[in-house]
Length: 461
Length: 80
Image 1 (cartoon, rainbow over the protein chains, first blue to last red):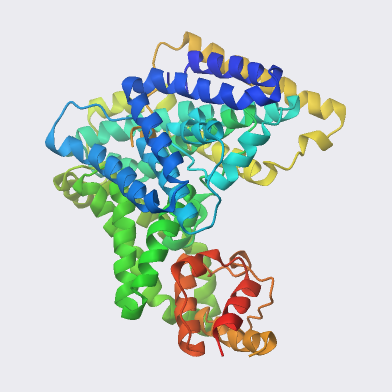
Image 2: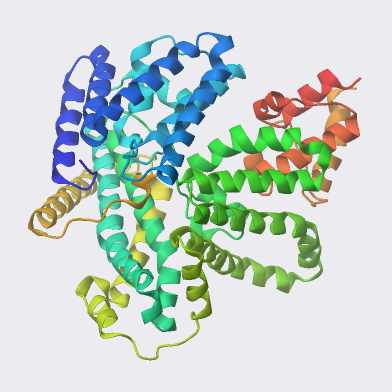
């Protein structure tokens, strides 16, 4: 049951209604039952792994001597399933294990460091690791933020539910209109790389980061919106990543909950223990940290290279920071130009990293970079077939992408601020009506569209 | 060493690490108030404080800091 399907919407709608009408002390049980039902549908017998890992973590959290052993077990479990495809093909991957094992390991480390009390009740803890909106692709919510909410189990007002639906619709727009269309072009170009001149390669080069952002942030929007309908406020995972003026800032704006997790539990402890080494210690910590972020996506060489490329960017930024600052102070013009060029340069660096992320063979990377500037000569008829489809026109995609950025801007500005409630009655009801119409329109499109949406990129990690 | 003295010495360290002579910290300053204060510069800051005050922090202590006030409190405990 994928998030962008009518059965999922029906399941979510029925559950949200039920959540609203049952007594408060039943709500947590309802969330656990629904989450395990959902996991059974997508993960089948791996449900036992989820349950087992959760129970072991819950009981280990109560006794200090088992805490670190259990963290080791959870990480070994994750490494085992990530490494399995290297040795044996055809094995199924337990969906969500990358996300829930990090949630559980983070809980144990926080308990070990004395930053949180062990959870007393089992039921909220079962809800924490299995919470179905977050199990496919995060966000990786921290226990201190999730557990009190699920224990309070507050009802969801009509207004809050509408904001949840709006957020889900935003995710559908990003996925159906931008990610799926852009994705078809990018995949086509990468699949027949040697058949294309420079322009299609450039299109894939620039298109992939945009597709990835629309896809992953769309999936996150649906997850956050679905959680809102069930009384849970989730952390944000994206904050205008392509507005970042440096790679350092980019990682504070992209897949925020993963970056924060790895920073807290890997980078900071490692950097602290290597601090006597000075700058080499910092560089080593950055490389370990970024390569781990790469490998978290899968144990493949190209993911490790992707991490190393980003570690190299971060190292260069850190080592040149002071001399750059001095230069900016001497030359205000340089400072202004850098301010303006920062996001453009950062986007290009991210796109270069994206090639390593997408292409699983170094030959592909070489081919793309060596022919990137070949120009428009002789576009193949097959490429014309792809690009001439209505949803693939560059003008349409550019307009849709611009609209998405505007919607996201509005989302960042107004999310959680109850602006609709402060509107006059006619304004409020206009919003409700438009949301209803947009929702009905989306369902209608899903019903009449024979073409299935592509799987979410981040749902496989 | 009293808190005011620690704060003024800390202010110099902050100015040096964040390369900004006009920077003024207060007890309530947090990482979100200083743009360049991220996980990388945070440890640079800690290393410099350890050097200047001749003290040592543990990873847990470094993670638990919420604002400059916490940092001053921690230094006051450790520095003689």
